[in-house]
Length: 281
Image 1 (cartoon, rainbow, N blue to C red):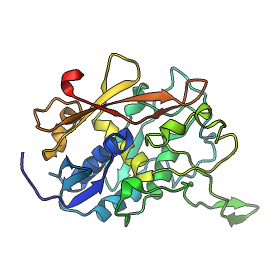
Image 2: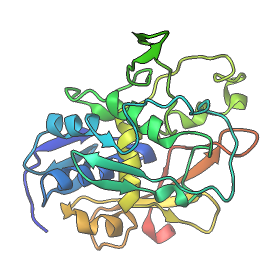
Image 3: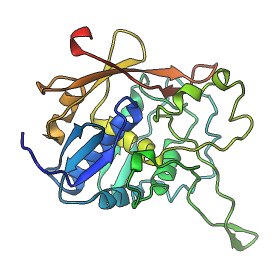
Image 4: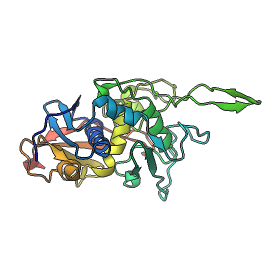
């Protein structure tokens, strides 16, 4: 393993599973844009050594082209929090066509999936991607109300621009988790149509990061472990590092739960992780 100088550094809270796996997504995207990229955690930051810049990386994420989606043009998607789910549901992968080629379908593992079967993963993904600000110097903490990208439709022979629909995130960002259930806040934000902020970089890059690197299942349902590392590694070693299988000094283990955020136990959310020593795993 080398000791390179980072060209990209982002602030990260490693106890936030969404931010942690978004860092894995950053490295995935960086390696596909600039092969040979290496990543590691350093104090409260995630570092990447590559041939590009943070703005380049975020710009690539923002500009993704997803197969079958024209910037969210789809009139058939249901409300974000409808809770229908078919146990025999066929997983529809997200195919990223540009600026990199990447197939995402990890949510066949329902234990780490957070959304219901009726929710359109493609529309959530494209809305989060388009909301990314490439010039943001603290991207994992970019917070805003996310809407579907602007679109035009033909109505009575004329092109009109309908009011954009607010798009709920995947609920990877653990900052939303403690207040995701109506019992936690005393009312249902969704029923009251309250507009809440999301972290689009966390949501979109976590979706990418989980494809290669999954948290390690514990003996408890929906409870997982993951590990940070402090030595630069290439993308090929990322799954082993996340699972705590690499002999790297100063690695730290974290445990989190994918909890239910609805009474029907369909919708879930990641909540903050608790650090632990590997000896006490």
